[in-house]
Amino acid sequence: MGKRKSTMKVQTKRAEPLATTFKCLFCNHEKAVVVKLHKDVMQAELSCKYCHVNWQTTMSNLTAAVDVYSEWIDKCEEERIKHQIKKKRAAKKDQEASQTLSGDNETRREREDIVEEEEEEEGYDGGYEDRTEKRRRVDDYDDEEEE
Ligand SMILES: [Zn+2]
Image (tube, rainbow, N blue to C red; front, side, top):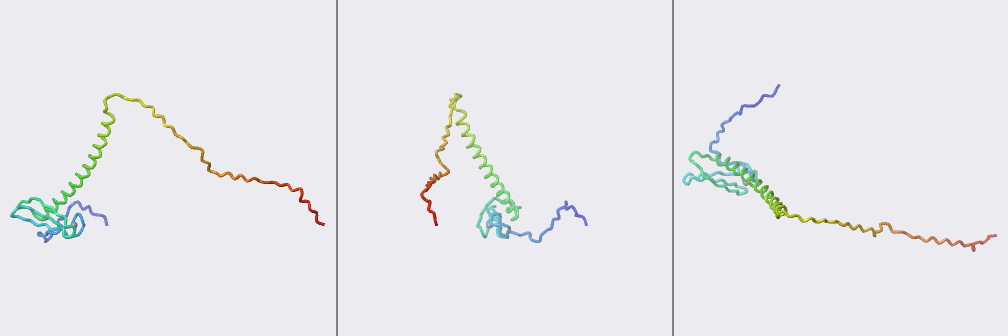
């Protein structure tokens, strides 16, 4: 009967603490992203088997592969948002630039009455007038009487 509110997250401890392959954000392949931890240089490297996306970050002794992976996801998200903001800013800058160019041009205003003359050509005849001259030849001559 009723639905139980699942407010409590059940943490299932997976017996795979050494999982080093994850789903790829770019090509969506499962178990495609391999994380390598180079503890000797404190560098973590992550790459996808399929799309060959590659990412590196620094790590600590406590860093696990999954940490690198989640950091990568965060970074990807960050980059995406940054990119979007950049785009928006660029668009805004463009707008502002054009506005200052046209509006801040000293304070003199030249009034120009722009009269838009719209020439409407009405010479176009849509309908072709059929002048059918009905020649009414009243042939009075046609008086043949048949007998
Ligand atoms: Zn991939």
